[in-house]
Length: 363
Image: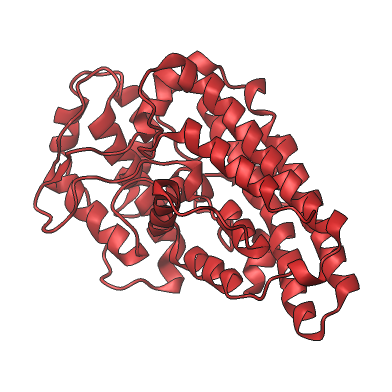
């Protein structure tokens, strides 16, 4: 396993770039990012965007030396595109203008992902530390980009960032299991399983903090619409791009898919499992590769102590239960549409995941 994962979880190898700098030809995007919440209050926002001359990403192949800049470019354009299509005060747009669609498509092609703002752009690349030497944790974090002038949106994103940072402990434990399985070192395997469950329980505690600074009605009415899926949206001037794209959703995080692969949980084939498989297309390519690597590992179950193995599953199920509770409080109670931002009947599916996770315990 790449050491970056065991040190940073699924967060980027270095803290995200905050801006391109005032002398950069891309500085316009920093200004747009800063002003976007105010611009969205104006009914003429789309006219304003149509008149913009957005610079194209200057490279035709991805390069490690400019990857941080490319990610920030994708964040800025992804936010702008979702804002354009889903502007709250207006009917949803069905055409993304060429001046925005073409550069977004180009950047996303380089990143190996569909051309829409997803979980990586909304959370994984969208944070900064107040104290660079401090923890990647609530209290020392802020967002780089937002849709609205509400701290509730910052909090929503930053809770996920801390959860992703904790995932480094999970991936470090899985790496230890990778080394211990060939020699059947049961003591080391069970120690790693205990590390895994402790980390997941910490993630549960962070997810439970959502209501501290996020009002359910503000979430649903003010900023959730901006991370909604695209439906019947034409990308002007871009050939062969599907007009349906999944919106930003926590299902695009790589944490649970990695844990499911590690624990070898057998979720029944269904539209749900098809959806979860599709969510991988919206993950960074290196995350998809990591999930595949863990899937290829032998099962840890035959060498695992019952208590250590089951505690991981119980922590996973509880995490999903907290998620289900917030889905009920922040979404389901406000709307009859059963689809989440990713376009799925999330309430039914989340309960199925919880039940099947607990059913996988060693009896």
